[in-house]
Length: 255
Ligand code: TMP
Image (cartoon, rainbow, N blue to C red; front, side, top):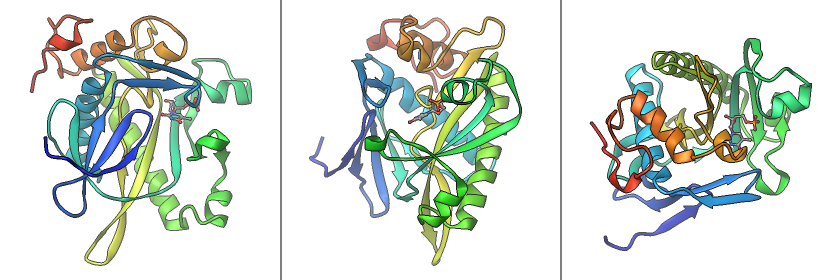
């Protein structure tokens, strides 16, 4: 492959300059991290699965009219995406209590929230991505009031879409994290869903057994992360039902 300019390397992805202005190649690594990278491992096949899963979810968003960064998948580990000015926030949507909200508010793990709860965290590894209020967001200029409104309404639309898709394959969407970027068309700015949507940044539970099918498997040492992600991909029809669960070198991908 021709040499490309690396723009940024994160914990799970590398960004390269794309073939045309305004595009970026997003490469999915096999690295898994948890607790702000205190825990690290290489999970063979994770990057391939997340590339396919994020493509699947972003395409689904496009189909229901939610703008997002996906242009097209390029190969097993890479996708071409729109370059965007990233909003330095993580937007978290919660349907059931899990993770940090359980500790913070003393909620019962797994309890249904009265309605989807939206939280904002500042993207800052040194500070551990702290929870921030909407007033912080506006006062410190991380996003303007109309951007906040757009992020909330788009996040709720993504929640409806994603909850429905996952419920259809017997999986409960507990919570997830989105990132947004700003793009310009004809001198008008608008926000798009960017980064990724994958089991790295969602909590998925089997509807019947409550089995964890997301990065909590790694966070809590519950077994094979690649098997959990493969299960999600199998149910969504992204990998063949008969594909071996653990031999990712032989993952049978379907269109
Ligand atoms: P939390 O319970 O740890 O706050 O996480 C809520 C959801 O957001 C969960 O699905 C994991 C996801 N998330 C990320 O993807 N990246 C992050 O940095 C954080 C804090 C959460």
